[in-house]
Length: 206
Image (cartoon, rainbow, N blue to C red; front, side, top):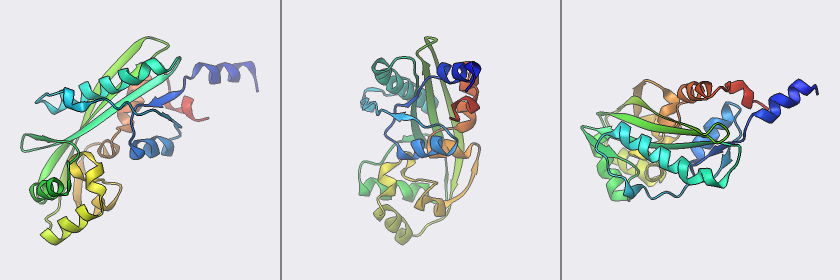
């Protein structure tokens, strides 16, 4: 290995994902980023904002900032997602009854999935915070289908009560915007943010 290659490897900091989401971790793995997972355990109930874009950006920033002191020379990524339907903001449903009620509103309707992204570069002492939104159109569903989907347990684990990469994909008619954003992390936005900090996504392919 040449001295130039060693320099290239040494200057790329570890990538830390301040999220317990398996979907976000898998998404990063599919594009060659092996993240260190360190959930923030930040109490989201502390933050009450009526604007979904501002809400997810604020939560993403707090999650990243909570984890950052645990690391040196790292990139810390915090994310948060909510679904907005008819002006109402929804995160993960609290229980089965809430998930069923949510889907009764969602079916045959559309919602806007917002994901906040906060990226802290400890080496440069810089923080970028941005949001991405994707419109999701849901199919008409019977009560039987709604109850069967909720019974899988998947909706209870996801913002918006659905996972487009799981059983929920059957009930999404179409999306308008970034597909990976619906999974919980916009890869095009991440590429842009890394670029603003002076990195290329290929730098992380090791």
